[in-house]
Length: 343
Figure 1 (tube, rainbow, N blue to C red):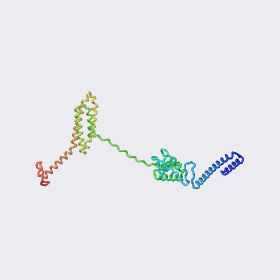
Figure 2: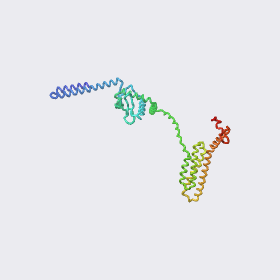
Figure 3: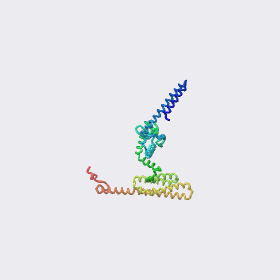
Figure 4: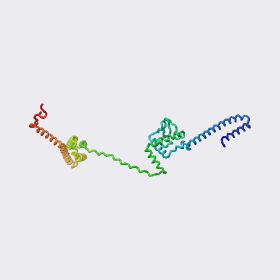
């Protein structure tokens, strides 16, 4: 039975009550009848408008998603690949950002701390909250399609996201493919380890002086003072004559390290002075220090021998030239103005 028949039945009931009820009940039923008539008229008008809207949606090609997520134009269907691409793009975008501008005054923002899906986005206009993206799609389907299209465009600009999206789609069972081999990573060159710096004259001077503080014998201490003085002279010559470095290799690599080891053992044996071998070892150490000092004097002479030879040769050459030009007489320069003109 339709609404029109129900309305006619109500009028018949009201008419019978009016005929047979009589008395004071008639005004009450009159009021009740008026209220019921107005109510039924409003309901009928609302249903009529809903039917008209439903017919318009059907004629315009729009359908309503019964899950309540959003309206979608039947002509705007997005492929799973496009939606996966959007999700990957948004996941990367919201990893370090809180909102995404869409158009001149619209931006999308996430609900919580990280992006999960389109359902977790809110729509803002000029910084003011409007509604969730799902509600926005239900209220403004055309604007919703524009937002989705813009997201598709943005995600297509990122080639890296495209590769990741394809990998994600290929993981689905329906489209299982053999995974492409990963490119081999080139081995990174190991950082060069700095070789420890070989000790020089200054290092041995500091070590010998420190050990000398614990040596009570005066002769040994004086010998070590001379050793340090000779090392200081060698250090100065090495700075002035850099080519002499090779002549000092054995001194730094063998002679001085052995001397330092001997001195360390001697310092440790100070507690065993009553041992019969102590005096013999002490005397041998004095001779050893004298030998190392003589060796360093020889090295010092060897560092400057060539330079003295060159200096002597230059002096002889100058004397010979002066003598050849007749400017010397018994070791004295004569005729001072002969080469440069008369004064």
